[in-house]
Length: 191
Image (cartoon, rainbow, N blue to C red; front, side, top):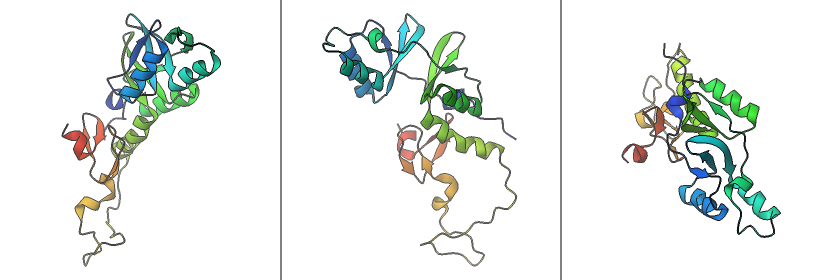
């Protein structure tokens, strides 16, 4: 029996960082360019807060002249975090407790990655597969498929266990495989 899925297995090791003195517009541009919704605000290597797209927009709407605004003006000083060894259920519970769509993963006082709601959903399948014991594994043909005499499907690539959302690009696919602790589509595995 495999162990439970941990934050280390599903976390994204790359994240957007900003300094509290960074220009607000430049940080917004960075978030758009990196296709991220949250930037970790660092003082040196120490996380001191976060700034989200909503924080940036809220500050811009509330301020008459935001041309001199910095990340420090819009950031939230609380940083929800977990350790890399936190179980997936603990990650989920911490997200719910903080009403956050992401968590910072901290190890020995240093940020090592982030976990998003999407990561938790994609990994939930991994955890259920590692803890679930199948008692009856009879396959059934789905609509549009020809069934064999014993009722099994004839197309192995259409098995339900292989379809889902790619952890890297978010695309729904019928060809997922576990790679470095993430469920990836064929395109993302080849990158």
